[in-house]
Amino acid sequence: MKKMKSLDVLALKWFEDKDASQWSRAYFTPTSKCDVLLNNMCKVFNSFILDARNKPILTIMPMIKDLIMVRMQMNRDKAGHGEGKLCPKPRAKLIKYVKDAMDCMPMKCDRAHFQVYSGGSTNQWVVDLDKK
Image (cartoon, rainbow, N blue to C red; front, side, top):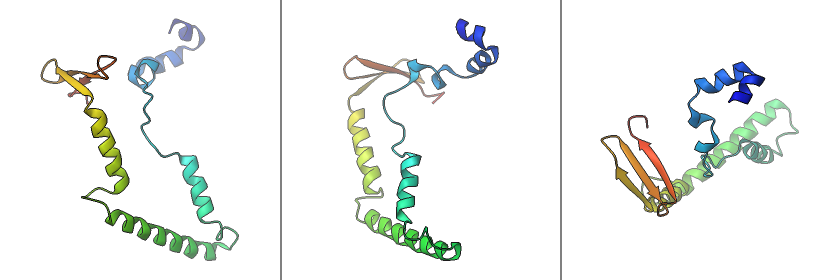
């Protein structure tokens, strides 16, 4: 932080105004928070509308609408075959998270604070329910 102050005081102020969990490497996790990459979605959409891309705009729009309608119905059909109220993919993720959570051992500190251990004592986190 001293080195940053000597380089750029405004940058230092920006960091000081933020909670350390938003920028400090100590708080980063190797676990992905999202399994969707925007770039990949754009590539999929572009290949999805490949036949329509060479046509005039008044022809493209109904073609894209039809493609999206068919795709949405196919997804609805797939979702209808799942068990319970969750679609198959989110259900599989939830089951995995539940299995991972079974390895966690919470230790209550007070009304809103817990120390959670995972993998024996190799990983541990403080959970503050008030701050979420």
